[in-house]
Image (cartoon, rainbow, N blue to C red; front, side, top):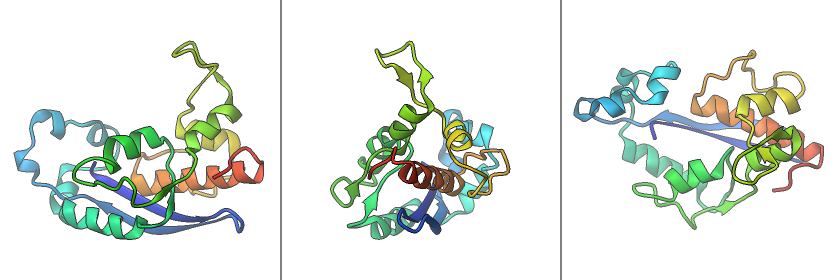
Length: 172
């Protein structure tokens, strides 16, 4: 993980507040080609230089640990963000916050994209599709383009969650 974005959402007020955003700093000179050519560097504006100049990864991890402790937390794809990263080394955040319903799972039943895999009726919608399909206007300010950066994605997911909560298709 090299990019973190956290927002605070009030479902009752319908508000989204940026809380934290940081690139995680690593010694990229030690990285092999697999890491240097990772998806994020090929598909976003993130650069190896940004990672090399960012705060040390452990500082960012400590910041995130402090921010999320005892909070209600969700994501757009809990299986990816939490099971693959936040619950594993070096994050080890399992049990430090209360997990709410997965926004992506809720959006699946709203978007109703047919699936032919895994015995599921519908497939998981990509965040930008769910956002454009369910959310009126552009409250996250993406101007029609998902930049795949953590804070921007968190804003999109937050506004999506708010709209589905209003529509009674999301329950924390």
